[in-house]
Amino acid sequence: MIEKQTPVSGWAVYKRLLRYSVQYWKTFLVAITGMLIVALSALLFAKFVEPMLDKTFIERDLETIKWVPFALMAIYAIRMLGAFLSSYFMAYIARGVVRKMRTKVFAHYLTLPISFFDSQSSGALVSKMVYDVEQLADAAARCITVLFKDSLTIIALLIFMFLENARLTMVLLVSIPILLVFVLYISKRFRRVSQRIQSSMGDVSTITEEIIEANREVKIFGGQSYENKRFEVINKNNWRQFLKYHATNALSSPVIEFVVATGFAGVLYYVTQPGMIENITPGKFASFLTAMLLLMQSARPLAGINAQLQRGIAAAQSVFSLLDENEEINVGSHNLERVKGRIEFKNLTFSYEKDRPVIHDLNLEINAGESVAFVGHSGSGKTTLVNLLPRFYDIQQGSIEIDGHNIADVRLDSLRSHIALVSQNVTLFNDTVAHNIAYGDLDSATTEDIRAAAKAAHALEFIEQLPNGFDTLVGENGVRFSGGQRQRIAIARAILKDAPILILDEATSALDTESERHIQSALNEVMKDRTTLVIAHRLSTIERVDKIVVLDNGRIIETGKHNELLAKSGTYEKLYKLQFSETSESK
Ligand SMILES: Nc1ncnc2c1ncn2[C@@H]1O[C@H](COP(=O)(O)OP(=O)(O)O)[C@@H](O)[C@H]1O
Ligand SMILES: [Mg+2]
Image (tube, rainbow, N blue to C red; front, side):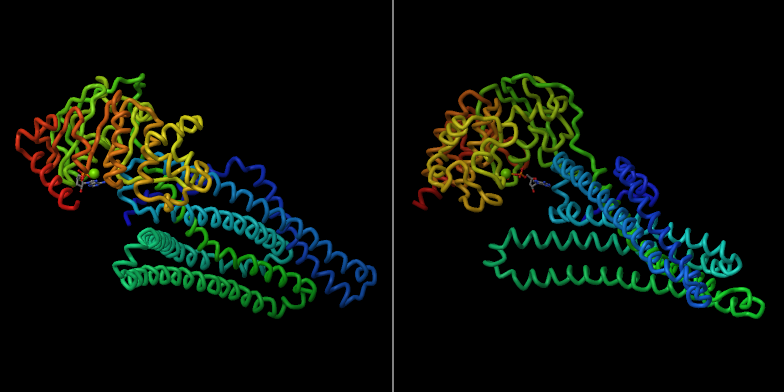
């Protein structure tokens, strides 16, 4: 998988994340207050141990004995409130960030250029949306909770311990530098492993999506064991990366605990020395010890936080680098008025990959209202050529003009609003038939218009036979329809758009000769008063177009009307004869 990771420091990521959460600062204050309450309750508890031991057990002070149980309950009642405030409101912020980020990612996917999607697997892109965003918010929320709640608790406890017994606290603090060195070392490892986990989650989605989509091919070509093997490699890698993560995580907490316990040991050693032990009551020492234990309890998640933090940063980098991908270039500012539809290709050269042009210095004029058919072997550049018109790809050399305007200077939405397209691979949306025809900008179309468009596309018959007619859900990618039916819905969509320029890229390839003939008459009607670019796979359907352009390896080798080209006895004639003999043989 090609992963263009923006090289950013941890700090840059924090700052950027912060921008997503600043709006929640009030909520954050509530959460922090909750955390403060939790920290305070820990301190109260440690303090509480001293009178509990000294007064109730040693001095047996009746007054104290009476309130001690209630004090304990009160402390935990306060803690309950604090814990709720901190957990709920941190989650509130995290979910808000997830929502905002998903909105951004989704919107970004809608504006990225086609060339971006050509280079990425859709599974990995889905995984970014589903897995990475979730990781990011979850990790960030946990980090902040731990960082504030436990840090506040630790600070409160340390202050308390310092006030109780400064010298003992100093002994404990010796272990801190050792902790820091360890934590820094382990952070790097966490981040690296987290990045690998993400990319491997992307691999898992990619292959899964592939076999789901291609389940017919897998079945008929016996691909099961091959796919199982392929998946095993990916799954094993995923498993290994997760184990590395957990090994690091599992090691880091105990190591930190061990270092803190060593500090404890120092305290114990020190406190039992002669001259020290006489100065301290059992209650005071128990109180100090409680504070130490609570401190240990708070230090433990602080160790795990590193794992979370690095996971979050890795996820943030992945999401941010996606958001940094350039949107479709929309430099044009010109707004096209209702165009007539004169199209001119001027010295057009285009390549997908550097220095490997698939269109070579192509020149072609198409008058307004004319219909032009492109023919040629598969791979000769027909689809590429018509895809340049709506600027699906950016032109590198030469230009295309519509009504004399260079399309590079026209706003994308304005340009595209003048073009209707039926592409080679029809995609239907998981919605009703009616919404599939009246899609996008067309959603204001009336029921009659939709019906008329369906009728013109010869789709009305089969739509009316559906259980709910136009309100039938098509299901994911229209599985319940045949290829020909799908094409007819797509043609209805293009007819409904009623744009001055119509592109038909093998729009009737999935139809049988009979229905194609039917649709052809309808299409001829539609083509009448608009500029139409047709790519036909059956040459019999284009005999009546105004101009036929024969392409070979991205170059125009012949142009003319059907009869003229046949008379020339060139490539077109060969192609035509070939098809003619095929069709007559198969009859
Ligand atoms: N997205 C793409 N990235 C790289 N190369 C492509 C892409 N689409 C098509 N090509 C290449 O461009 C050439 C022309 O393809 P295409 O325009 O689809 O031909 P046609 O529609 O005439 O069959 C082919 O060699 C094809 O491999
Ligand atoms: Mg094609």
